[in-house]
Image (cartoon, rainbow, N blue to C red; front, side):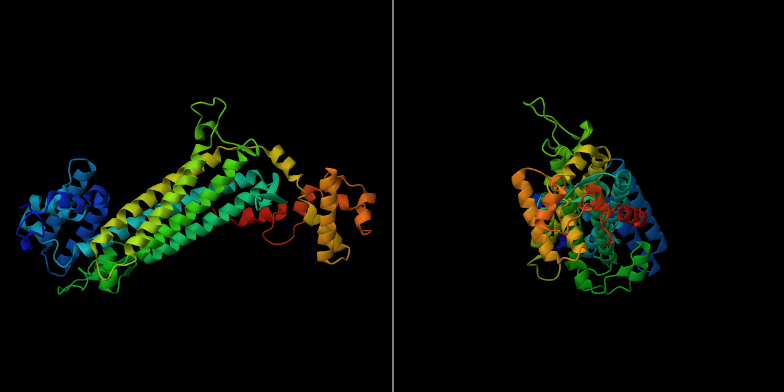
Length: 455
C-alpha cells in the first residue's frame, strides 16, 4: 500500500487510475509558497500555545524554508501519490525531519489549509491586477493629454451621433477601468478573511490562537464560522466576476480598435509589432492582439461560470468538487494579467490619424442636435425644433449635402428663426466647445477631467 498520510483507515491501495484522477498536484503546485507560509505560521502558533515546543517549531520552520528553496531551484519532483501540494510538502517535511514533521498537522485540516492558501494567492493576484489597472489608466491618461484637440465622431448604435474629442472617448474607458480597480479593492476586503484554524469544519479541541495566525499571515479578519470558512468560495467567484467585467471592458475597447484600424474607418493604425500578416494575402495587416483579447474574454467568462456551476449544488461543508476551483482561478488571473499587459503595450504604439477622424466628424449630420439647440435658444420648444431639423436632415440627404452647406434662405424655408449666426453654431468644433454640462466633451470639460483623474 502506498504511503498515504491518511492510510490508516484503508486496507488496500487506491486504483492507479483513481489515484491519478484524484490528484491535483499537477495544477495546485503553484500554491507551494502560500502553503509553506501557512504552515510556518501554523507551527509558530502551535509553539506559542505550547502544543509544540519552540525547538520543534523552529525545526519545522527551517525545514520548510529549505523545501521552499529547493522547490524554487527545481530540485523537488512532486508525487501524484501524495495527491496535492499540501500532502506533498508535508510528506517531504516528514521525510527530512521525521516525527517532528508529523506533528505539524495538529489542529488543522486540509480543508482550512487549502482555504487559506487560495485566499493568500488571490490577495496577491488582486494587488497585481490593481497595479496593472493603474498602469493602464496612466497610459490612457497620457494618450488623452496628447489628443485633447483631436475631434472624432461619437457613436450610438454604431451610427455617427455627435462630435467628441478622442481624449473624451479615452477617458470614458479610463472611468471604466477606475471602477474595475474599485471592484478589486472591494473584493480584496472579502478575501482578506483568515480561515486557518477552522479545522475540517467544526473547529478544534486544541487551544489555538487564530488572531495570532491572522497577524502572521497578514489577514485583516478571521472567518467567524468554521463551516463557512472551509465550504464557500464566494470570494473567488467575486474575483472571477471582477475579472470578467474587466475583460468585457478590454474587449469593447479592442472591438473599437479593430474597427478603427480597418480601411473603412482608418482612424488608427496598429503598430507592426502588435499585428500579424496573412499566409496567403500579402497586403494584410491583422489586429490579432486586439482580437485575441476579445476572444480571451469568453474564456474568462467560462472560468466564472465553471466555478459558479461547481458550487451551485454543494451541501455543507467541504466537498471534493471544490478541488476544481483552482483551475478557473489560475486561468482567469493569468489571462487578465497577460491581456492588460499586452493591451497597454498595444495602445501605447497606435498611430492616430487625426485628420481622418475630424473629417469623419464633419459628415453624418453630427451637428443636427446643435442645430436644434440653436432654435431652442430662439424660443422654440425642443420637440418642434427636433421636427424641423429632422426635415432639414431629410432634405440634405436627398440633396446630397451637409446641413452647413445650406444657404440662409434655404434654412429660412424651414424656420424664420434662422439667422446668419447658425453657421458658427453648427461648426463641428463649436458644437464641442458649446457643451456646458459637467462631464461633457467640451474642451474645457475634458481638460478638467484630465486634471481630476488620479494616476
